[in-house]
Image (cartoon, rainbow, N blue to C red; front, side, top):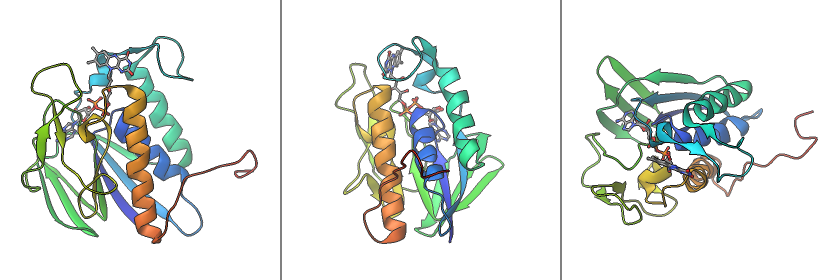
Length: 198
Ligand SMILES: Cc1cc2nc3c(=O)[nH]c(=O)nc-3n(C[C@H](O)[C@H](O)[C@H](O)COP(=O)(O)OP(=O)(O)OC[C@H]3O[C@@H](n4cnc5c(N)ncnc54)[C@H](O)[C@@H]3O)c2cc1C
């Protein structure tokens, strides 16, 4: 069974969600993943000293490049520069559109950060971000397992978590596992062991 996933926002949250999904590919389940990014990540301003296992002082652009390589070693994904402006359709048949861009998908992950949300079609989901110490930061309202609408999940600072790389990664992993669980109809976790890929 192949599922198509559109991930809007290709910084640490979008890439973490893609990595979890890519790692879950197996004989029964496969993915087509398109990641669309408009090139304005908060991660671009960062040098990281406070996340375990990241090399000391690693820059945001290097985190993005290395994580994308890690994803592609498991499952080839499309990373596209561009901006999504509109979402239509419903679970199983979404259409995400931008200028000269159109992506059909079964699921969508919104990993669009906390600076703004400029995508039409989802109604009144933008709320103030309560955990950031800068003005005009936003989050998206969701219910259950970070579900903004059926089949559309939010990840990273857009979900309202504290603005840290590790919290963004945690919420993105949660969104990806929620999608895996929805596909399978039972709780799914993405686990490996030292011998699972040999
Ligand atoms: C100056 C500064 C220093 C920081 N230092 C640290 C630190 O030391 N340690 C730490 O843990 N955290 C730090 N952070 C916080 C960290 O950068 C963020 O928590 C993290 O980047 C959030 O990741 P994200 O993927 O949720 O959002 P972002 O990194 O903001 O990425 C969101 C992405 O979505 C894209 N996007 C938005 N809308 C659309 C659209 N419609 N279509 C396509 N793409 C879209 C944007 O262009 C962007 O690339 C710092 C942040 C800043 C600003």
